[in-house]
Length: 108
Image 1 (cartoon, one colour):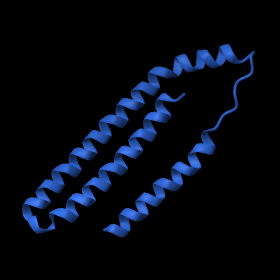
Image 2 (cartoon, helix red, strand yellow):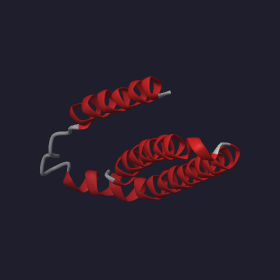
Image 3 (cartoon, helix red, strand yellow):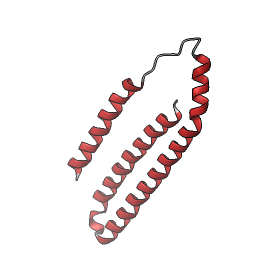
Image 4 (spheres, one colour):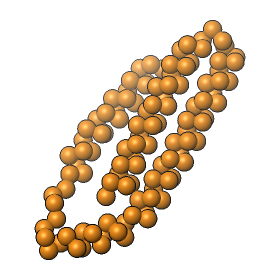
């Protein structure tokens, strides 16, 4: 279980580290500034919809993790510490992916 979480964590780190240079853009020229403003204005509602979907998905995911963890602790109280640690790590990974999605959706 811990080995699988480490693999997931390292995969997220690699994806985030390579996404930052890939998303870098040059500043628009003065002639293209008005077109860039118009493009950003048109793209804002789609970004807001995408951000909302990301937040809803994260809420469902963290809720599912919490429900499963409480059920598992109720079945085996002696394993509560390990279950709680795994739950917190999984919830942190979901929140990290959600913040990344929010930055992409609203960062344009």
